[in-house]
Length: 218
Image (cartoon, rainbow, N blue to C red; front, top):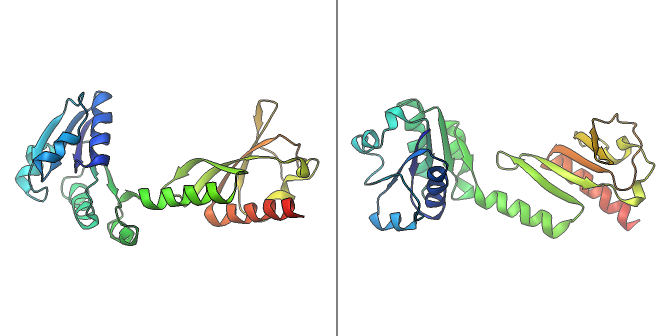
């Protein structure tokens, strides 16, 4: 894969080094030459210094042959503009941008760009860990709009139907019992120690969390 990483701060340098370690051809661009000191000692790609909005620099980076581009600077405006240029002018098939300030996520939505928001994702995870140890996130799609949670069925729910636990949270469920997984019917009876994997929105899982909390307090 030919990949371009825009921005060589902590995120960009770590991403570029990981891609390089996997054998991908990586070019890193940053306006400050000192930023390249962030790269790992085993980085084997190219580095280019300059203004990423300069057409000549992008071409020297190989954007016309690029398979992927990551815009991970600390400027949401720059990330969104570069991502849009890469997709619409150079037709780079895979473009991902870093959302630095959560309040600027709309930039990426306007351009219909894939974005990763470490601040939002990290806050959601920490909130979850502080509030509840019953539900654990095992996978997060997008910026956490839809996630997969793991739930250990408590003793209080032994013998009760799955539908009673889920209510109308709109969850999709897999059940693991004695090491074997299945897709249970809504009227399946739960056993203490069952492991449920739920795919749900944040709103849906919040309903489930409240139900478990109310049961614990009862």
